[in-house]
Every structure is written in C-alpha cells, then in structure tokens.
Length: 484
Image (cartoon, rainbow, N blue to C red; front, side):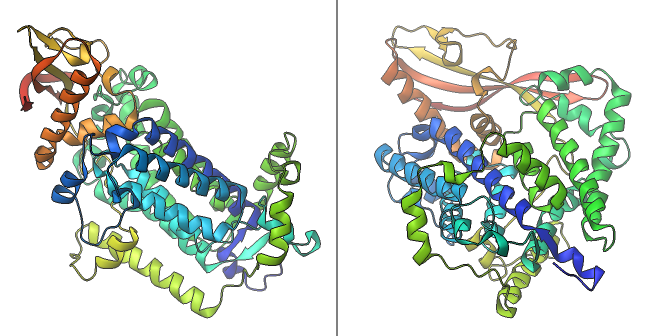
C-alpha cells in the first residue's frame, strides 16, 4: 500500500493483525462463556443468587436489554448459552463475520446486563472490543469469509479510521485509569501495591513472594502509575509508528503479565493483552502466523467446510472501503466515548439524555480499577447455620463446627473469579438489598443437596482492615444477612 503522507500512517493497520485479534477475542469469549456456564444455575436462573424479580427491582436500567431475561428457567438459559457458543464459534472461524460479531456483542451485553454483581472491568473492555470490531475488517485473513478473496488481491496494510478510533479506546483504559488514581498511595507514597497484595481474597503466590519487599513494591507502584498515565501517548506519535506501537505493546503486556502472576482478577489480563493484537506491526503478525501454520492452526482448508465455501461464493460480499458516512459514524462514536470518559473523572456530569446511547449500546465505561485508593477491607466469610437437631455448623466448611478463626486459605470458597467478584460486591453497603437473595440461595441449595437439614442461616463476615507496616485492624464480626 503506497502512502504519500507519513502522518497518515498512524491510521494504517495490518489486516493480519486485526484478523489475529478476532481469533484471540473469540477464544477469550469461549473461555469466558465456559466459566459462566459452570455456574449457570447460580448466576442466571430464578433459583440462583439474583432471580429476575430481584434484578428488575434492584439493578435494572430502563434502557438495558438482555436476552437472558426472557425466562428464569435453567433450560432456557442453557439454550441461550448454546446459541451464544455457536455465534462465538462462527466468529472464531470467520464465517459471516460481520453478522456474528454483532450477534456476539448482543449476547455479551445480555450476559452483562443479566447479573451485574459478577461484573468486572475486564468485561467492559471485552464488550468494547466487540463493539469496535463491528467496524473493523477483521475477517480479511484466517477466516472462512476470506476464502473468496483471490490471494493476488490481498493486501496487508489497511487505512482505517475505525482502527484508529479503536486504538484510542484502548488507550483510554489506561490513561483514565491513571487519572482516577488520585490518592497519595499512587501519586506520592507509592504504597498502592502493598495494600493490593494485602488482600488475601485476591493475592496469588507470586504476589506473596514480593509482598515482603517494601522498596520493590514502591518501585513497581511508581512504574505502574506512570505506565498507565504516559504509555497511551505512544499510540498517537505520528513518526516511528511501528516502533512506538511495539513499545506500547511490550509495556502493557508486561503490566498485565505482572497482574496475572500476582493478583486474581479473572480474565482482565488476558483481555488486555488480546485487545492490543490489532496494533501489531506486520512483521510480528507474520512471525505469529508462520509459527501457527506449523500446526495447521490457521489452515481452514484442512477442515470439512466445503459446503460453507460453496455458499460463500454467492452470498458473501467484501467491501472494506470506509465511506465518508461510515467514517462519520465511527468518529461520532469515538467522540462520544471520549466525552463519556471525561465525564467519569468529574469534569462534568452525564444526564439522562447524554447517557442514553451509552446505556443502550453499553459503550458506557469507568476505568476506576484500584482507585482512587486501593480497597483496604479484607477478611473471610462464615456461613453459620443451625440444623434441625439444634447444632451449629459452617456451610463453607462442609458442615463442620463453626469457627471464626482465619482459614489457611480464605479464598478457598471463592476460587472461581465470578464468585470472588460476587462476594466482593455483596459486602458493599449499597448492595445490602441483594444479600437476602444470596442467603436464600445458600439455604435452599444446602437443604436440597445435603442429608443434614438446616432451619436458619447467617452470613457473617470477619472483617480485617489493612494498615501500614504489615499491620491489620480486626477482625470484627459483621452479620450481613439471616434467613429461615
């Protein structure tokens, strides 16, 4: 592709990189769906922690929609999950990619709107990747769709306003996250990582190792803060574009790798890394492709898809030109997303009218991870139940006698991240009305599955507060909810 104006190279993306990103996104969606399906009844049915009446009464926005609210039955939810999986597989294979990108996006919005109590920042990013993917030509390579394109006609470089707007979106994640980190723990004391690793609910073995080195924790906190604040500007420097993009990719990949090793925050590190694949210079994408071809991972001709290819010859129309109208719509969305992010840091307020598009399309976003200060309350749960025989047992300890002592592994009951996030959200005072649903779910599940029946249940939290210099305040016993 011939480019006369070097400045315009900032709008150029490698089609192979965009196509690899599609594959990465689809794989991530499958992993996410599998994790969610493991707790399908608990998180998405009327016998779970948030039945539909509770959702509509406590957590519903009038502008939301969700396919998963059609019914609260297990069977209907299973059907919807299977349909969702089918759409993701079509996206992975690159079959009718535009259509199935939209369908995957609709299904993902539906999942997020169905149960906000298990929602986290990585979910927002994944949803936004899919939204911008609707405007990206990420089926040009390594897809069933691309079988129609003559190899002699294929280009690798693509001038894309949509790609540039998507790149800005990724930059917003880190830049606005840094703006939210306004406490001295991030900006002067550099103690944020110390407090994060003090949280037994999320710390991992690698985090426990470095936790004992306060000077190292301060240095890493300093680096993380300024990487988030400054690295996004590397994406808009209009010279040495491939080099600066590569530096950005390396810095953010190292950031997410560190998070993955030290903190249990679900799929967020994976989603963050996948979101940058579309920025890869062509040379990197080519190396990745050559490696994958050794395993025939991208050779779609090796699969039994002949009937699909025959269908494509008459049905698929490739038109990757970004018309003026198309670019205008994309830029309008990009401006709106920037407007939304600026509003979230307090420069002005969103009202019912300005927030309407964001709520309907779910391009709303808030990148306040571990901000303005790191959450310092930590602790462990006790599910104290009285049996029909009058004895007191702890449901979390498989019916053993209640003890309020700290467990050897406080994360044991919530090793699955969706449950961990739920347990974190249920502690918030603003979510106290959700607690009776959770208590009823645990009560009914135990009596349905266990021989020893219970007649009442208390959800108790033993709260500790992290203090400076490796000290804690507590624990203090808090009764969150009780049911009969």
